[in-house]
Image (tube, rainbow, N blue to C red; front, top):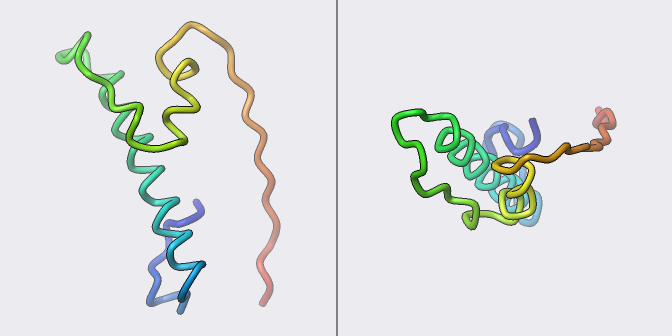
Length: 79
């Protein structure tokens, strides 16, 4: 997954390092939303959709009754 690598190991600096940190933040917010929705003991509890733009954009898809299509592109990195 993008953003899952360590900054020191990849020697990323500047914009790429901040971009990786933002991706990690969004993925963590998505995991928090999924955990809140899947926990039966906290049924009807607050779901933190507003923690990131990703979860806010997927709000209806995660908690609603709709079909979602996600398109992703991947390319090999340069050696």
